[in-house]
Image 1 (cartoon, rainbow, N blue to C red):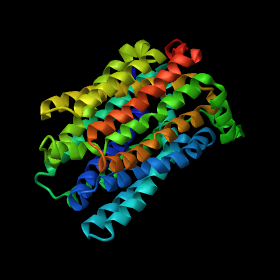
Image 2: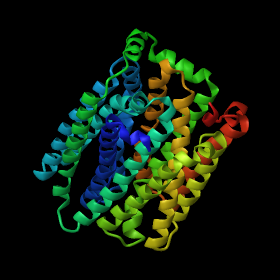
Image 3: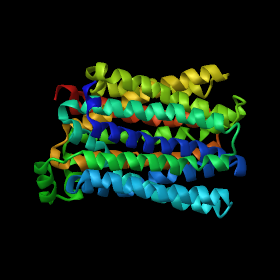
Length: 403
């Protein structure tokens, strides 16, 4: 692919993939640490979900920053600041100093940084490669995200068998440092278009204007409602470590491997996306993929052994990645340029509902069987997409590939 000849994009890719992997390595480490220390699925949901919740609050401002200021500078600044919070977390665990409180505080800052930096990082793909390569650029981004998420948790699972989990927490600031270095090289290499800079600085439209624009555009409105259903994915995540331990008989390394298989599925989807884009970027496919994802998740939670569970979570990764691509890329393609940053920020803000899902899933996991919780959350996802597809002719006609 010619996009890999662009050095600025390659380093952007590396920085984003490393930063993205931190979220899921942190999820595995904190989930297992809290489970072993407290045996509380509620605490797992709370502490792993907080970053996503604060992302909801600050993502719209991140979108405004992306529409108004230099995206490459925003990208670098928040990647560098993230190193500090992961060092603080690792130190607290190493010295057993107010661990729960420090994890809680650093989780809040992590969510804030993701919200403020995320829209700029995503829109830099189009800035660097141009609009004609936006699908290929996003597919490459998702592939490398999922590649690291598939390999690093598996490596973490192996290392957990020979190293203490306390020592493993130091992997987070190391990965954050590498991400910051790649962001700095991107900053040096990529020269922003002067015309785009003038348009950004002259745009006086507010977040409220972008909200009105997104609401009046029925297709954007429906896509953002679809993105809200990421809540259902979050609900199931705190249930997985307990199911792996109590039903499948796995230890921490086995749970890490199961988690990594999901991302192998997402990698498969990312590799095939440039070739299947005309079949993915429409409302019919978005609806179909969420149904297939839900079926695979429910089958995972009734799987009798490790191998069937692994295959089901692999399929869930494939279908969920196609759904994700359909929603995100359609939003990027159909949005007006002057509102693009804020529209994408609304998408990333809805991803903050993952945090609420983590907390809700952790709480419900203490009250009900995991299959009951997974089925109930799945019904909400299905019902939302069903209503949009059946009752909105504008949404049914969505085909962003042709635009």
